[in-house]
Amino acid sequence: MINRLVIIGVGLIGGSLALALRKAGFVGEIIGSSRREPHLQKAVELGVIDRYDLDMASAVEGADVVFLSVPLGAMRGVFEAIRPALGAETIITDGGSAKGCVVRDAEAVFGSVPKGLVPGHPIAGTEQSGVGAAFAELYQDRRVILTPLETTAPEALNTVRAMWQAAGALVEEMAVSHHDEVLAATSHLPHMLAFGLVDSLARMKDNDEIFRYAAGGFRDFTRIASSDPVMWRDICLYNRDAVLKMTESYHRDLDEMMQAIERGDGDALLEIFSRAKAARDRFCG
Amino acid sequence: MINRLVIIGVGLIGGSLALALRKAGFVGEIIGSSRREPHLQKAVELGVIDRYDLDMASAVEGADVVFLSVPLGAMRGVFEAIRPALGAETIITDGGSAKGCVVRDAEAVFGSVPKGLVPGHPIAGTEQSGVGAAFAELYQDRRVILTPLETTAPEALNTVRAMWQAAGALVEEMAVSHHDEVLAATSHLPHMLAFGLVDSLARMKDNDEIFRYAAGGFRDFTRIASSDPVMWRDICLYNRDAVLKMTESYHRDLDEMMQAIERGDGDALLEIFSRAKAARDRFCG
Image (tube, rainbow over all chains, first blue to last red; front, side):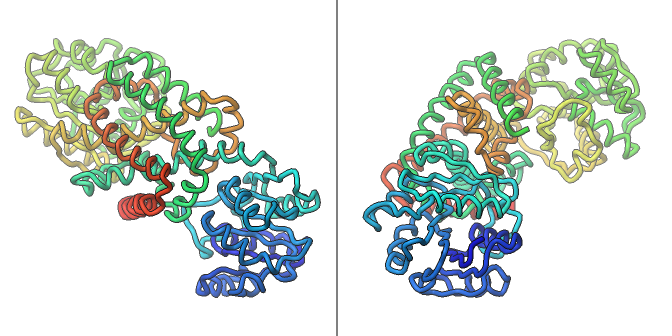
């Protein structure tokens, strides 16, 4: 049970957490903060938060848990803003899609990583964004990865784990750098490929006609290209090394496939496609 | 109205056409043929075809329309098999995902393109295959592209157009080479990217763990990697030039994106992602 939860950035991720915790009776008061008053007003109207405070420092005063769900590029500024007002026991966690950069930002702002910091990443979301898209079931049976550090206080980790479990999630732990590579492979790289494909086609001559013949497969494949551009810009910048590493590995494999097409090597293609189908059917079937 | 329709290859595509035409009362007798007797038996049991004939030549005797729904690599062999038994007025059409190769195969087998040949491509399908997955509504409101040649008889074109309209489809016409490039961009290239990504991840160390953290976006993005490997091998081989052309163009754009990530150019990334999101929301929203 959390007495006072402060959510910085009340959109799909933060808003859905608020709704889930309230539904579970796991939270007393929920206070929102961000730089966008109309969004916060809407969050109050929708019953997602109890009240809001545009001043992040005064918002976090007396908080038991502070949850940061802002773009990765905004994390450092939020740490700076809340630092003077944080209590000695305040737990800080976040929902950022990369974790190394959050830890580095915290180190830079606090001098060392605060023992109350539990970096986290809910593997959930839709291509929608904003508090209007938030719903209490978003985290039901979804994985949440926590990447505690050696310095992280066990009670902080326990509270954040219990919070996500109350929201319905399956909580796992992972090292920061491992998280960033796994997510680069399964999430960040696919987003780059989808954004890249849609943009590549949009820049072609007669692109209206091209998109007209796009069938269901294309729609599914490119759904993630409707995601929030600012969030994805930040992920690329802040998880750069892992994204580039995974992309290079993928590029090499794709080049091999293209060479097989060029030399008309049907056996090589059949092997690649069969292996891919088997893996997809096995893991996502 | 078609008195006798012969379907060579009774899977998802051919089977769904049969079900749709029967439901519309647009066809008298439907005869199936292929080299796989168990599939044909199943098609009879499911009520998809009236009867079957394993000999393709005798199957097409007396046919008004012959529909080929076999992998692109099998088209030429089917043309050779049915050539001696075709009537002067028999209409031949197909459901292949590339059209240039079908026209070239027909030219090679018949000496010149038969005036009864109407190359066609229904832009429909699921990642399922086989006659068990066939259903009468597959083509409802889906586009079917016909790529008639200068030599195509107008009455053949009219009959094939009416057939697809009876199945519920929206019929359009396009030049052969234009069809092959548009489909390379909107369908063949995305399939290569999805097959390539899943295979690339499957070949990584700890791939079990990697797939475990794949969320909904990854599932959508890679759904097409569960498609039939033989069909896609053939598409790559038989639409090679257009696939390679579109892939090269995409590769150049993706390289630009990776360079932007490497130099930390957030403005360039935001521009690409925003343009892609706008295009996707506009065309597929």
